Image (cartoon, rainbow, N blue to C red; front, side, top):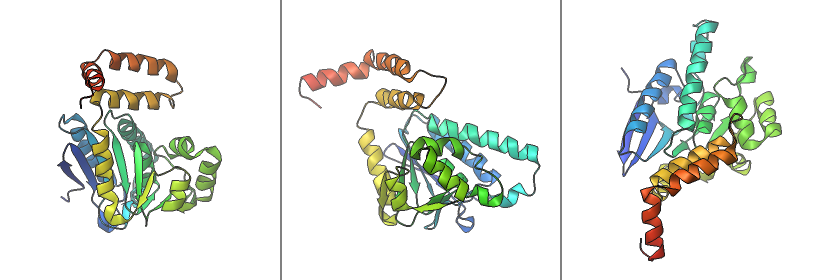
Length: 252
């Protein structure tokens, strides 16, 4: 069977590469289950401190869900798949290790929804992003209607979704959908450099910061109170004591 997810680890950073280049890395059910297994493995690996997700080839990150599969399964099966993907993307979003998306080409539909679940997004100059589901008579079903407005605002999100419109990399950067636009050849190295810069900070503090920021977008949580609680957890840690002591003594 084809290896749908290629995993490599370098200096504490795991790269998960979605590997269906002949299908522009479309999210088939098999690909989704393989991604879930691969992500869980690196998330639990204590040697891994950050995770990069990208696509195989030079054309696509993920060009969308495997729409052909939708015609061969029932409504109940589709709804079950959507629920499964929602849980997977929530796991990525709430991962206590930084997760960076390298958008190396098309990120459409489920591909953009996967990228938006990551904490930080980088795009290659040839990247094209969008949620074109309404052109097929459906709506984004993997979290796109919730995450896109949180990132770019309600009006722009509705414009993109209702028109099935696509944006290029520079447009995506201008609306805050991606943080960096780079030549394709430089994309992965930039992601690794960003990850390594983050790994200079305290691991517990990184984890708590992710949770605190995510709390802002959870309607069931008071983000300010959550921040206070997480600050307290950091304040009592060995890492805080060691780093503050080193700072006061002008040591690394």
